[in-house]
Image (cartoon, rainbow, N blue to C red; front, side):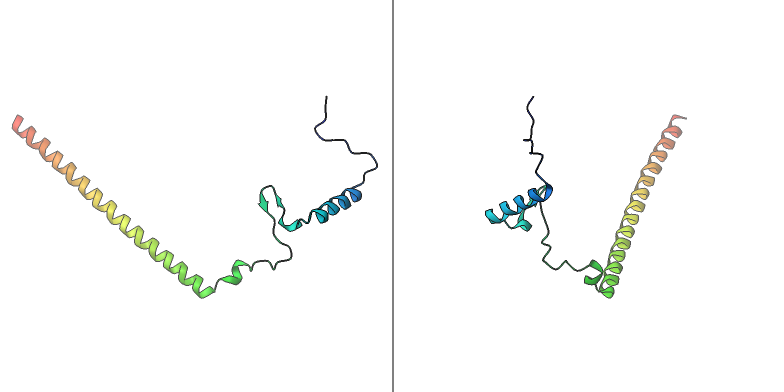
Amino acid sequence: MSTRYPQLPNDVSDDNLAREVDSLINTMGVDPMAIEVNGEQQPNIHEKPPAKAEELVDPEVHAAEIALVEAHAKARMAAELERVKAEAAAQRQVELASQHLAQDDLRLAL
C-alpha cells in the first residue's frame, strides 16, 4: 500500500521546515501577503485597518436615514392597507350581489 504523502526523515524539525519554506519563498520572489489561502486573498497586515462603522457614520445623518426608512415603511403599509380594504369591499359587493340573485331566484320559484 502506498502512502499519499512522502515520509519525512525523523531528524526534520519544525524550525528546519520553516526555514526551508522561507528560503523557497525568498528564492521564488513571492510576496507572502499575496498568497491566497482557501481561495481567499489574505489581508495585508502592513496596511491600516479600515475604520469602524461607528466612526464612518454621522449620528445626525444616521437618524435622518432611519426616519426616512420609517416614513417609507409607513407609506407602504398605508398603501397596502388601502389595497386590502378596497379588495375586501369589492369582495363584499360580489357576495351581496350573489345573495340578491339567490333571493330573487327564490322569490321567483315561490
